[in-house]
Image 1 (cartoon, helix red, strand yellow):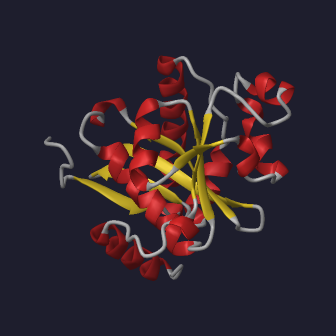
Image 2: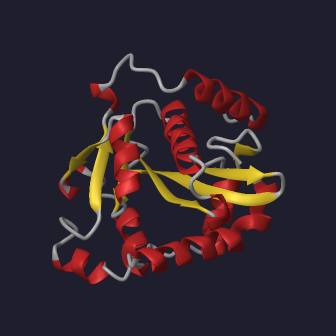
Length: 205
């Protein structure tokens, strides 16, 4: 396959895609082991719920799992996170991570246009993608104070550091996209049209 192969489709997941959840979770765990980094553990039901809510994005090559990410709202929908970005080893190096990132970013902007979008990451590749989309590094003080979000970090091996620093610092870098600083700047028109089409079909527009 060539980079950005048309054989790999990016879709907003729904209940039919729950069959991929365990493979997604295994792929995320294995990726964290290879990088030697912590992850916030998610349950099967948590990821399946994101799919049912139209908050998850899948990359599929036919019926083969190629990649995944999801979004979630926090602080009464004033913040949105993009999380869990992973590409299956069989499909790495094809530009799929960037395609997934573009879809989750656009999905968040379309569904909650006034929300600040943020990401916690320790990966250089994700930091670069975030920067290209207009995110900037910020202190944790500028992120959501929603306790439910920070509880999600309890499964990470670095959680003790986060607790010791009173949720103000950890191994991950906080990155934030503020829509008020990017008024009139469009996302990819092709991705925008596809996201809108999928949301209309789901009745989520």
